[in-house]
Length: 134
Image (cartoon, rainbow, N blue to C red):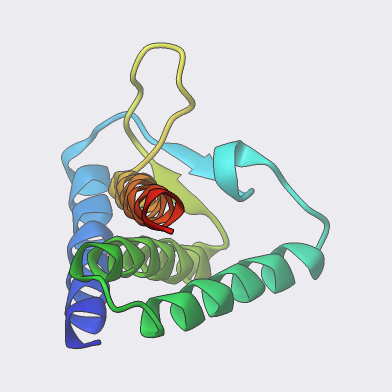
């Protein structure tokens, strides 16, 4: 459980500070009022959806026994907290990276994506292992 909180706190702090530094340095910046991929939900549904998703991820992260899965959940929580802090300051999330045709994203989004991939990969491996050992 300690790994979960250390990962979440570290990622939240680093990605938030990184987004502040990037804006100061002068990277091209996009302000995102929506959630994933810029999708906007009417208020208060957007806030409720963000809080519900974060609550579910925290619950799942607290109940995992796999270190890699805990690291993945910590990455998701840290990225979500960094984006939430960013959103609390001025009502938007600051995005600054563009890769090909993929939507513009920030370091917190990258942490969330890596965390989701890691959790799905570990869960998939465990599921296949259990499927073939029964």
